[in-house]
Length: 587
Image (cartoon, rainbow, N blue to C red; front, side, top):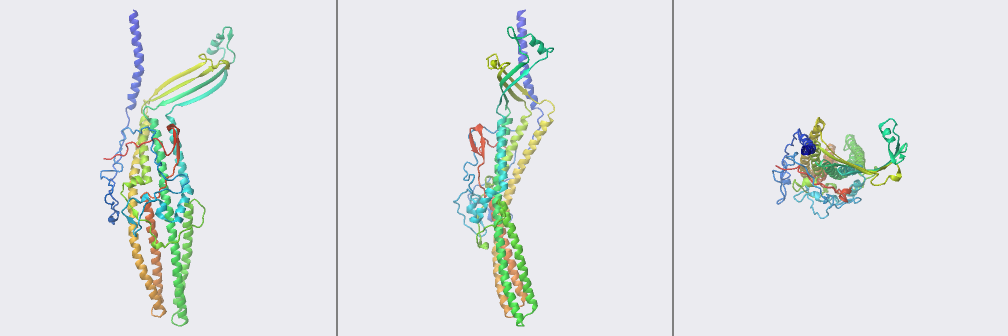
């Protein structure tokens, strides 16, 4: 009989042991059932081997012997969303800004050893021009001084700098979520149970020591520590932290891209200002020529060799150009104030260097190969990090289908009298609880979040593809513009030379009464219009050079934004523990 009871007790203990294991297994299996199939991104177009255009293709061939991109390489051709996107933890974190030359307060950092020979069209088969810093590329103290002021005073950059710090704070917040939470506290109070309650009836018959009853009301003193910890068995919390780290880096790259756009915009406005100065000079020269013609017409009228009509026509032409000067002066004020706004300062005169505007050339542009854009363009790097972060968001959403394991524990001292509070073990209290919880029914919200994360991942991929295509297109557009406008300028110069000769000839003939005043007017008007068109064409060409420099990745200025991550035991600028998951692959 005793043996039967022992065997029964042993079998009962085994069943009690197996029951939690079976329950945990059911939770694990059932949680993984019904996870939706993820959609995959459509392949992106292959990255071309060179910067080719429908016309002028010979100007954009990659230099001989340069690195080439395999035709099978796609921007983002496949996303293995079902595969684990692990970010290995390592204290040897990669610091994208570790080798940067610029620090907070420094106006500029960039290589100073590039030797680019200026040529007319402004295109050279050399390494990518983004390697040249803006100080050397523009080589104009007035312009570079404006850029330096803008890097410090531009409000948009300052706002983006705060966005970077907010993203850094998000990394720290996410990092703390997968570490244990510990709270310490103390409390004091009194309690008096009713005499006709269970607690009161029991207390009535209890004694602290023989012959000494519990005091009424009963004091209560407590000093305790509570610890709670969600065990990150599915990397849900760590993936969320890594996604935040990647978005921190993406936010930095977003600001870097705005810096390149700011440099290009200030340079473009500066050259527009020089163009307006030249328009003003052209008007002054034209008015001077027309004023001389007016005086000749008046003298000829006084001598009876001409009529009042010629005098009034020349007078009207002078007044028209004098009026145009006021319009140009207003445009100068507006362009100056646009530059002042970009530099973060109130309206004031913008200093500029005296230059021969039509003969002004910037360094020749080197396109390199298209794959250089992937490294040099900050907007592409930002889109790349967004793709990686979106892939981790999918893994975070997927982990919500599985059980979560939480540990809760507490230890402390509790007594009704402070004298007994730290008596051990009499006043010692503690507890420990483990909790395994998983969703069983009504997973619609979790499923919807999972599919939404997948959709956002595809959006990030398509945005990356679009960003790369846009970058390539910008380079081709601006480089062809530099070439075509450069050729147009040379032809316009020849036209202007011929028109200047015709004005001299017409004026001489008019003075000798061998030509009508209309011929002089037309020749002067055509000469002025051609000069204006030449100035505008030069402005467009310089703007194209500036925008091509920016499209290639030029004008970047690296700045550090310290992100303190105590868990890694050091403070680092942009230094977060990350590596890229396998979300960008080729087929």
